[in-house]
Image (tube, rainbow, N blue to C red; front, side):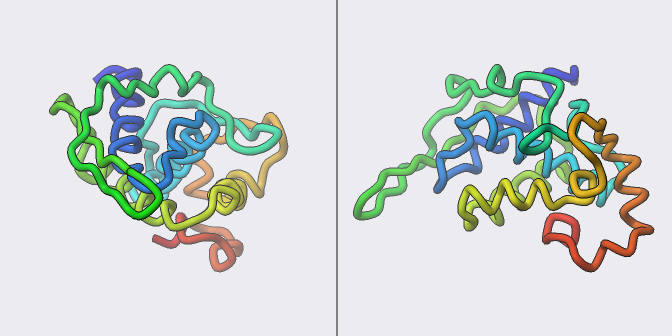
Length: 166
């Protein structure tokens, strides 16, 4: 798969697993989810899922690519309508295309389940509390693979979030 196709697949998995919040159509939130997915993948498999080059932005992780270009609802279809007293949510699915590796897709899906239970402000706080973010300054590059190796030997391990601890 090309770099753009990999990013598109990750965004599609995020959107199809975003049942409850609806936040994923917000580029900043989407950026945080992709960042956390890349970070978790580095911790578990020593490589990020996407080819995105990350940096420490003023308010959180920043991607070297505009992720809003990958929010393409036309790639998704409604699989299930979920209603409660006040809201309608839609479970989305996409046509089978070249998928991510199973372990990569699982990382994104599990992350979405955990994050769907959190308020938006907590999700942003979580991204900003990851090892790469707390050990760098604004505009520093976040080479996640290198940071995951440093993290494994760090005394900060015990203090960080569920993203780092599974």
